[in-house]
Length: 160
Image 1: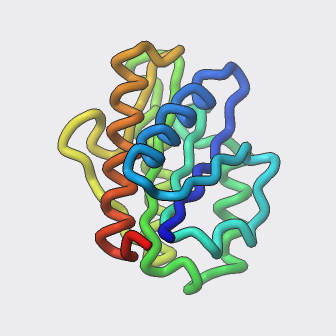
Image 2 (image 1 turned 180 degrees about the vertical axis):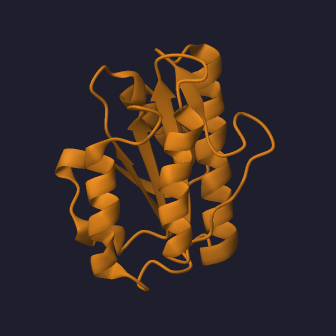
């Protein structure tokens, strides 16, 4: 069965709330999902799933040091992540606060690994972004994002 790993970091609860909604969207598509805090994630966790989604808060218009450490460490599995689907989302403190650049930090690393990185026509072209606590509309966008990523994983890697 296709599987997606959602890795997230959240200090205020905003990114965690987004990750829960993303997980709901993945489950709605019948794809197995594992959601883990970054502190509980090992580099070897990246090997098994067919899709990897990372959610991170935005610090200084970039992803956090903890997410960057995971990304840098992923060189351990260089060429082993090729062909997996990769996507990202972020929360930030203000409009223009760098949320999109934080998402792009993650997506660039996925591209270097040879992963398949989809764009989205609504809800955030690079991936969902929430300014502060995600409201019902942002949670809906996150659910749709999770469902979209799950459908892509099923198309590429099969439903079961």
